[in-house]
Amino acid sequence: MTGWRLREFHNDDLGGILHLWEELKRAGSEPVYDLSEVVASCQKDHAIVAVHGDDIVGAIVGRAAHDQGWIVFFAIDDDWRGRGIGSALLAALEKSMAQHGLTKLSALMPEVETRLAAFDAQGFELKQHLRYFERRIPVQRQELSSLAELGGRLMPRDLWGSVSGMRREKEILEQRLVLPLAEPDLAESFGVVPPRAVVLFGPPGTGKTTFAKAIASRLEWSFVEVFPSRLAADPKGLAGALRETFNKISELEHAVVFIDEVEEIAAQRSGEPPSPLQGVTNELLKIIPAFREQPGRLLVCATNFIRALDSAFLRHGRFDYVIPIGLPDEAARRSIWRRYIPELVADAVDIDLLVERTAGFSPADIEFAARSASQRAFEAAVGAGDAASDTTGPGTDDYLQAVAGTRTTVSAETAAEFLEDIEALARV
Image 1 (cartoon, rainbow, N blue to C red):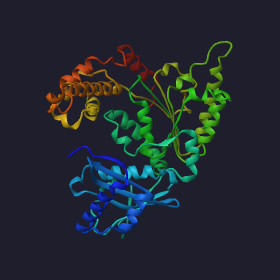
Image 2 (tube, rainbow, N blue to C red):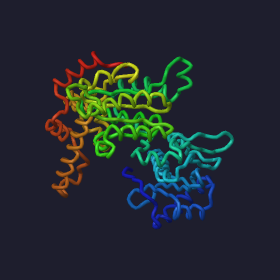
Image 3 (tube, one colour):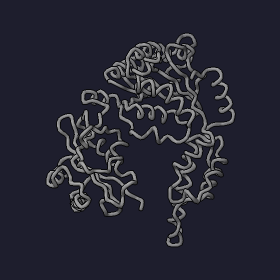
C-alpha cells in the first residue's frame, strides 16, 4: 500500500479518530487522555491526520499550555506501521504548533506502548521510570519575532540525511563544522575552536545552498539567508542595511547565516574613483570580525566565482575554511537518481546506465532530467488513455531521452577552472 498523505483534521474525520482509538484499546494500549479530551482538542487545538484515499490511517493531536506542548493522541492503523507515518505526523504537529513559541513538546504514553521509534527519530528523549518523551524546541519564544523579521526559519529535521550522495563533501562539513559546533565543550577539551565563518565555492548547481540549509538542520539552528539584492532597496543603503541585519541576527541565540553569490558584495576592490560597492565590501569586512566574537553562530558564504572575491575577504582570520563543493561522483549520482526515480519503477530502471550517461552533471542537472522524464511519461500516459492503464511510471528510455535533452550547467572549461581553484584557494 502506498500513497498516504498528511492534512489537517476535518470534522468529518471524527469517525476515523474513533476507529484508531478503539484499535488502540483492542491492542491493550489504553490511551492516556479520555476520548472526550481528544475530540475537543481535534476541534479547537491542533490535529493532523494521515489519509489513504478516504481512510484515516494515522492521527496526532496536540495542545499548547503556555510554552509547553502536549501530544494528547497519537495512533497509526496496524496495517500502516513501519511506513514513516509516525515520524511525519510528529514533524507536522510540531510545525503546526510553532506559532505558540513552545520550548518543549511532550508526550505521555501508556506503559505498554511499543510504537516508540517515531519519537526517537524526531529527537525526543525517554525519561526514566516513565514512558515520557519531550523534545526541546530550538527557537525560543522571545526569538520568534526577531527571526520572523529577518525572514529566517527552521529547516526540516531530516534535511541533512536527505542530501543524496556527495559523501566526501558531507564528511568534511560534518567533521569541520557540525561536530565542533554541536559538541563545543568536547571540542574545547581537544583544543578545537568551533568555526565561525566558512566559504563554500564551486560551479553552479552543485548544492551549496542545500548544504548550508542542511548544516542548519543538522545543528537545529535558525537559518537566516541574507539577500543583498533586497537590502539594496533599503533607504539606509546596502551597507547600512547589511549592518542593521547583522545587528538583528545578534539577538538570536543560535543561527546559520547564509549569503549566496557573495561576490556581489565582496568583489575585488579597484578603480578610481572607488565604486559604490567598495563601501559595501568594506562594511562586510568590518562585520565579519564582530560576528566571529559571538558564539552559537556560523556564517556561510557561497560563490560560483571565487576568483572574483576580494583577496582581503578570504584571508585567514575571517574564514576558518574555504571548502570546495564539486560535481557529484558515481556514488553521489546514483544516490541522486534513486531519490528522484519513483519507487514503483525503481527496479525496472537501469540506474547504472543513467549514472554513466550523467558524468559531468550537477545535482540540479540530474533533478531536471529526472523530473522531465516523469513529466513526459505522465503526459504520454494521459494522452494514451485506457491503452496506458498498466503504465506505472517512466522507464529507462524516458530517462535517457531526458538526459540527452538536458544542457549541463557546468562546462568542461568551468570544471577545469574549479580544479585549479581547489589547488590555489581551498582550505579544509
